[in-house]
Structures are given as structure tokens and as C-alpha cells.
Image (cartoon, rainbow, N blue to C red):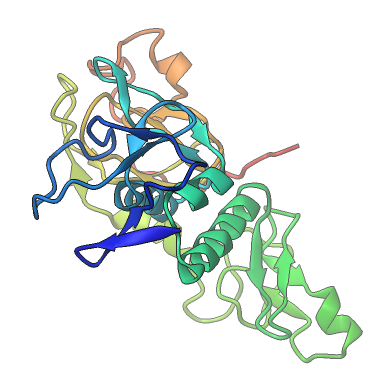
Length: 272
């Protein structure tokens, strides 16, 4: 149950299932622009939120490809809380609408599946299928074979009927078949990490050296980044795992091996 203030959702102060607090919103501590104070409720980690701040933060995590909801509120200095909120808690305290719940749940399912499976919709039968041989772009759709669909074998990269010899890991023989992610890695612009001393421009997009997903650095803080897919930390500059990079440098200084060149091959994730 909720009441509306200024056209926005707000907690019902009569809801005994929530713990209300008289302190600023920990996710958005600035006073509201319209000057209307809204009730704040306490999350399981002890930090205060409003439906708007909680919805906005969790949606931003989904947009970044993260399917776990971590509390960003600061505890000591610049150290974030990091507590993991269960989706049922987020859904309840964000006061999600039915449409928002559907969107959140579909996105959560897709992101969670993507962490463990390489799946796409077959261009023939439109069924989502999983590729187990990550070094082979030639895919045999068993569902199409069983139903005698014309597209039984297709290219995982360009999603057209397979042409040429197989197996291959680079491309099929269809015109314009290319790895768009790899092209982006080769042709993206550059960024400068202003807080990391002695590091010049480096590519703005990298492929995680562990799982291969594309990631970007927000150009704030240290040179390391946490992959939203495999959860492995690595250095955005030299592309070494964080633990290896820090053996000969620190978070805010240049890497001993310098800036890694643009990647010319996509890392293949060995999840076994």
C-alpha cells in the first residue's frame, strides 16, 4: 500500500511491515527539489531509502548488466556498504508497479542466464539455444532438425545460414560476417584515468580477460574494474588480474608492463 505525493509513489506510514526512519535517504541524501519530504524506510542492511532512490539505483545496476543488487551507501569514508539486497526486498521497498516488476524480472533472468550460458535466438525456429563449443561459430540447431526447418545450421556471429568450412572461430563465409565486439575493441576511442599517475590514453572499451564481456571504465577512482559478469577484478590499463598487477604497482600508479595494446581476439571463458 502506498500514498501519492506530488504524483510520485510514497510509503504508507501505516504499513507495519516497514521500518521507518527519521534521517536522510542514504542513496540520495540531497533535499528533494520540490521541498516535500517523503518517508524513508530502512533496508535490511540498515540504510534508508525512498521508493524513487531505490528504484533508480537498482535500474542503473540492471542497465550496467548486473543482476545482483548491492547497497552503494557509504559506511566509513568512501567504503560502500556492499550488502546484497534480495529481489523480493527490492520489489517491496521500491513499490514496483506490475509493469516494472515484469521488466525487472525479465532482465534479471536474462542477465543471470548470460553469466552461465552463451545463448541466442535461433534465426529459424526462434527458440533460445545455448552454444557449448565457444570456439566454434557453426551451430547445429537440434530443434530445427527435428521439425525439418530449413535453417538447421547457422552462424552464431551473423545469424545467417552457415557457409564455408566448419568448425571456425573467426567467421563464416557469408559477406560482412564479422565480430562486431572485436571491431569495437579495435576502433573505439581513448580515455584518460585522471586519478592514476603516469598513465596516458588507453582504449575506452576492453574485453574482460576472463570471460570476454565488453566493459568500460567510468574514469573515476583507481585503475581496476570489477567485471559485472564473472565478478573477476582486473586492471583496465594492463589487463592483468588485479592481484597480479598490484604485485609491481599500486591502485593509482602506472603498471610496470605499461598500457596493454588494443585487443585483437576475444577471450573465451572456460567455465568448467
